[in-house]
Image (cartoon, rainbow, N blue to C red; front, side):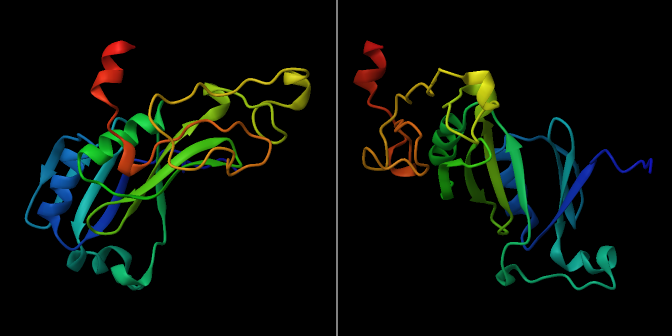
Length: 194
């Protein structure tokens, strides 16, 4: 069946505080505001728009379905592909944004971290490990015959690890140093020597 349902144009997020949401997306994502009125602010990502709509305006868009309250739990995860999750996590920490989880190596070959906007919408930053580096572990990276006899590991992060050595979350993977929110600022003396 041939359909025209193949291009996402706008994501509408229902928010309790439009000015706070707008400030978050401008400061954290660095997005321009392309439209604004009393009930919404629209910001532009490279490939789509995010409409930050006052929650009290939402019923007319989803009727007869009810608008869920923020306290009912997360119902969606919005993922942004990035070239370096560790670097983005460092930027988020500098902006005072706490991570919900991660960075973590996912079984499907992604290095991810998640955080929430002021209204509770959860965003994930994800790095495709298949493009960046291979570990050679089964189910991670290219088909086994493509890496026969080789093991390549991701280059260590220059930032300190948040977990003890030898505790990689996936057996058979390298114990590469990882970054956590409390350890995101490298020592300036180390930066000058590299």
